[in-house]
Image 1 (cartoon, rainbow, N blue to C red):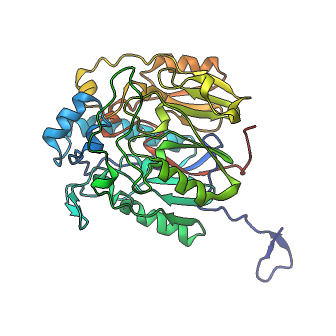
Image 2 (image 1 turned 45 degrees about the vertical axis):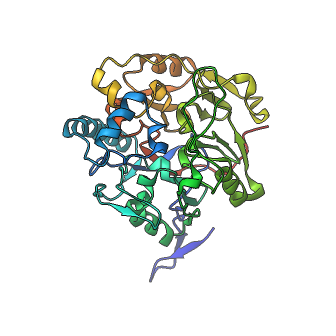
Length: 376
C-alpha cells in the first residue's frame, strides 16, 4: 500500500485510496453517486414517426398537436415537487447527487439533412451508458435528442479529468434510410416489428441493463441489431450481451420489461416476457414476476404519460436489499417485501409525462463493487 509522510514528521501514514470518478458494474452494488435529470426547459418532442410510434396513443395525439412547445407549467410543477423529494431521499441515504445543466430545449438545431427542436434532460439513463470505469454517449434514434448529452458535458469533462474513460458512439445520420416508411404498430397477435432498419447503429442506453460481465438488451424502436453489435464489439470478449425477447408492441427501454435486482434475482414483466424463453445464462436465477400495476386514477396523468402502465417496474436499487419504488404501486411494494427486499416508498408518479420514473431519472455513476460474473 502506498504511504505518505507528513512534512517534518518522521511518522508515515497510509495514503487515502483514490476513488475512481466512474465505476459501476451492475444494477445493485451499493450506490455512491448518481446523476438525476432536470425538468427545466422541457419541451414537447418534435414530430417524427420514431417518436409517435413509441408513446401511448393519447400522448401521441397531444404530442403531434403541441410538438416544440414548452410543457404546461402545472405538469412541470407537480413533477418538480416529487423530483425534489426523490433527490432529498437519495441524499439522506448517503448518495452523492449531481445534475446536468439546464437547457433551453426550444432552440432549433439540425444537420444538413434535417432540423428539430429538443426534448428535455429528464432521463440521463437514456443517453449515457456506464460500463465499469467507462461512460459511453449513445447514438440515439430520436432527432430531438441528438445533442442531449451536451447538457452533461461539464460532468463528463470532470470525470475524464479525474481518470474516467469517456467514449462517444458514432453519431448517426438519422436520415430516412434508418426508418421503415411502411411501419405501423402491430395489432395484438401480429408478429413484433420495429420502425428501425439496419442502416446505421443506433441505441439508447436504457435498452441495456448490467449484471457484471453480462449485459441484457431488448431490441426496440430506438435500438437496432446494428447498435447492439456495435456495443458488443466495442466491449470485446470480456463481456457477453444477451437479447431478451419482448412481446411489447411498442418497445422502448428494457427497464419496464426486465430488471435485475440482486445477484441471481431478476424482475420480469409477465405481459412482455416469456420466462421459458429467457437466455440460458439465467438458468440458475430466481425469476420474479411483477404484479399487475395499480391503476392510475388521475385521468390527466393517464393522458399525458409517455410511458405504459408497467412503469411500476421502474425501480432503483440502492444496495441489493433496499429498493426505491413508487408509493402509489402498493402491489409492487408488497411483492418486494415478499422477495426479501426492503422497499423504500417515494413519489415520482408525475414524472411519467417526461419519460420515466426512478430508474429512468437517474444514472448510477459509481457503485461500490468489483467486476464479476453472475451468470452461468
